[in-house]
Length: 215
Image (cartoon, rainbow, N blue to C red; front, side, top):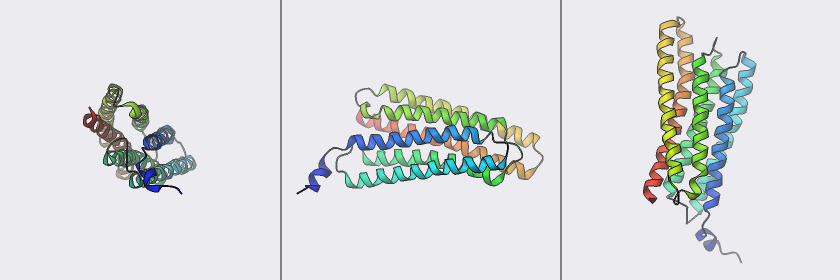
């Protein structure tokens, strides 16, 4: 007869690492798509990209749900369950914001998306790359935390670049765009990208908290 209590006591570290890694890969894929999405020239393509990114957003939600279930059913976790939950939740925020950006492009159908959007989207992709590298180090972070620290530092650097790009975009937008409706559309679209970079940095902060707890 299967001993369910014994199963709950057995370490299941790999499962959490695999789920987080899968979510990280999903974010990277979505970040690749949003770079293309902000460069679309017609509404049909925007709709297609939104659908593809929305599918990835659903996938990320499903992964987060699995992590939540495992946290409730696993007695021993690789590190604090609150930190695991915070990691998955904030990673899901990145996915939600990428999806939100693509949704706004699809709904608003702006006349022209500025080059700043492509720059921001590429910075979000850069953040996603560093985030995935950091997640890949989680399984051995107690032995060598320096790698994760380095990637977290890079997340901060990218976030500051994203802030600068967004601020300069706003200055240029208000100085040169005369159509108030277009101003609102473009501001909303790029704001979601800037927020995605912020969310990636927030994941980095959680990772640094984990390192400090176990150092």
